[in-house]
Image (cartoon, rainbow over all chains, first blue to last red; front, side):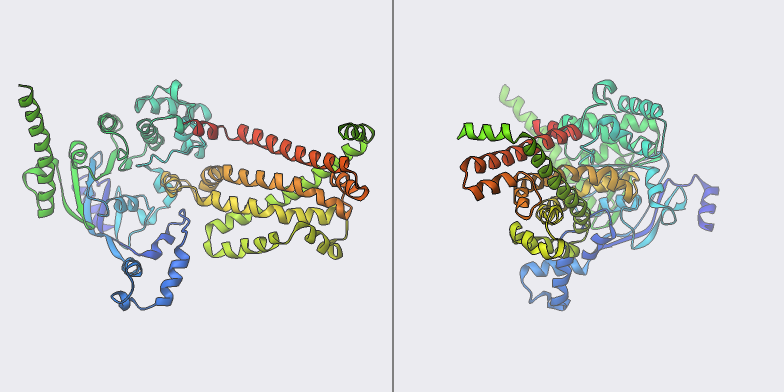
Length: 318
Length: 216
């Protein structure tokens, strides 16, 4: 308490603050997420109970050794601290399994941290009701997650309707949101998700997440499954939406170009640790870690490939 | 043969209508009971794999026993008439409803429920707004299977005096009259197909998005 009030005096409270956050995963953790029915979890745990000695890893067969390794657990997020200011667009960059999605899901309490705390505008999210917390945050995932049995209008207005908004207000909000994400409202509102392209589905997903004007948007590789041209369009739209709504955006991606293009600051993660968090320019100029350096070099090499093959093309033309 | 059948229909119009009515209500009562048992049990089983064995095993065992045997076995307990017939048909109808309910709830993609939770839906809201609607097509398919099976098997109910179109068939058997056997069989089959078709139409109206998904 003391700590946060001190901070308020100095500067504005950060929108999100991670303090020494840990998250350990093991097999039993699937259960903590009640919304996910765990399928074979029960059987597997039983089997492991029969084997019962973790030391037998070396002597056990290949498949059960893998299971034991998972059982022993690993840190998906390891002692991570960061501050995100209000109105920033932060991209979280890392390869798959680096903990970036875990970090995001801890922010809206889909996962609970095993240690440390997360503060939203100075308040510990652990002390807030998860449902109320999530309604203050927008959440977009790679698969868009639109409900196939609802029209675009119903999808976008799901939460407003649960909050018992007037039908007219819901309708106006849907119109506003569809315009914001660049979809002609009257053309798209009564369509079903299966009648939309992948890019359009992501737009609707964005609109749905923005429905209640959340202060924080969590985006988990939202453009991961769309083609390159659509992705470029969506990135531009996202930048515009961020400008227009003025919220704090957390954007998870494994694409370095996307991360550096969108973020006003980039968090680079590897193996559950935060390696560097800075503006794209600073990261390129002063990589703080060998991993970051390798990452940037690989991106530059790619760039080099494109440039050189264009040059080659021109040479061939002559 | 056809003339005989037509003549029978004309002379026994009233009786046939009553028999069709009885046939239908026995079937629908059994189906309703099966839905009331199968859907909640299926939901419970889908959420906990440990429970699934205990819930579905008894019905699998019961299903192996022929319906006719169940009917006869039920006589000392439930007597004769409509009640044992409805019980036997319910036992027949529960497994397809139960299994499809389990599969329906299991097949809801985890990212869908997670996305719903991430938006700030409570568990109840997720169940009501996402999981049940998404499991519904599969559950309805199970109910449809059960419906067709039950109507076809309800012919046996006549054996223990429950009435229905089975009476025509059993009369044919007793009198060794081919025309009655055939007529009974055709009528039962027609009723079964008709109800199946009707059910499909209702499903189509209730779930318009399914047809769209198929087109793509």
